[in-house]
Length: 311
Image (cartoon, rainbow, N blue to C red; front, side, top):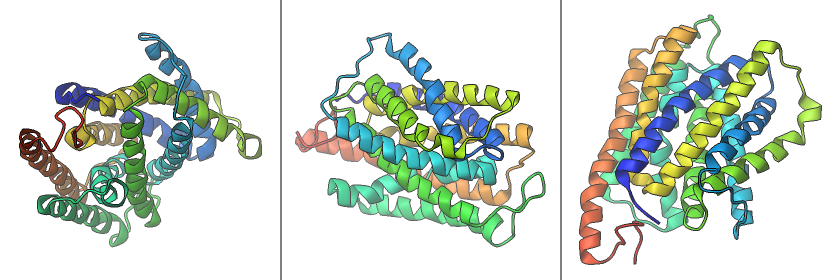
């Protein structure tokens, strides 16, 4: 596995724009269409774009870890359902900033799953990050009864679902990284689109709601944005260590705030700004702390420079 920080950061930052657009489109359709129906079309219409990008280096479906793809798709499907639920009920910028808890959960999950021992600095960063979550949730939603631009109340449980989605997203990221050790990024994206399309097609006859022309156009656009973002993100995590490039995903907050402001009349408040700074600051701190630790480990021969793992 390679570790190209610049390439990984650029790819991940590019993916954030398409993810922000994807969330906005899901917000538009999520109030009238079932979440599983949206996710079905998201994966169905993303498949041609994934195939188009995969054709650059050759379409490869052969895999020695089919079970890993199935597990990754199941966890990814749960994460997608949570995203549709939260973007439909929370302002885009708030949902986006709460999704940035993913690097914090990566640190926590690395203890039982990777048997890592986070440093004191990482624990401090995690504490700061989750204090930002409290500011975002309590500062506007749980204590003050936030309302949407349309005047509807924001349900308090949506904040907890958004937080849980960060943990599920962290699991998905860890699986992408593990599969990338032996699988091409486009193979991972192809199997995800195929498996998730099949999984969401099964309940479709029981939940089907016929979309209007505008909704149908949004569903096609959802698939396009998802396909492009998925390949860019998968390639990013295959290019560099998750802990190193994770903070570069924070550029998506700008797009989410702008789209929410001009598209839905959602003006970010002070609680979101302060909480967002705490969450993003914790991620940047982890990035800065990782660099000298990795350089020292590589110099001592206890870490491989390319993979970030013991040689």
